[in-house]
Amino acid sequence: MIYTSHYKDQPAITLETGHVRAQFLPTLGGKVSSLISLDHNFDVLVHRPQESYRIEPYDGVYVNGECSGLDDMFPTIALCYCEDAPWQATKLADHGEVWSLPWSYQIDGERLHLSVHGVRLPYRLDKTAYFADERTLRIDYTLTNLSPFPFDFLWVAHPMLRQDEDSRLLLPAGVK
Image 1 (cartoon, one colour):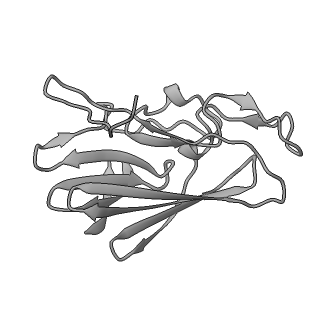
Image 2: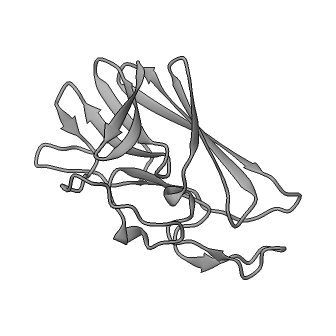
């Protein structure tokens, strides 16, 4: 099921099965703010204990913000300057720009579609979140270059994972 909710003092969209609850913040980078195993009553993502969400403005310093959940870092990871024509010397934000931008969203049945447009480079980044099965949250991404010029980019999922003595991180075979 999908429904509107709140995370701290921010509007959220929640996707839930009988086993997993995932909460997204469309107005704050489209991030996953919470990913809870309902079977174990355990949120795998880190949270700040404060009741209000620490908002960092566009082009702000990522570590001065909430530093929790799972953010998308795009089109870069560290603050840098674009080398591609015609955007040479264009400043690209710390941790990319999409983590600090509001995303538009649409609920379509059991799927959440989120979309954001670039500020300093001409692109649209779309993601669709849904449960592939009762225990598997899937997020599909599509990047559209809105210009006739190619540009280099990096995309990184930036999860802040919570670990305790009973936690295990299992990776697919072949991952080093």
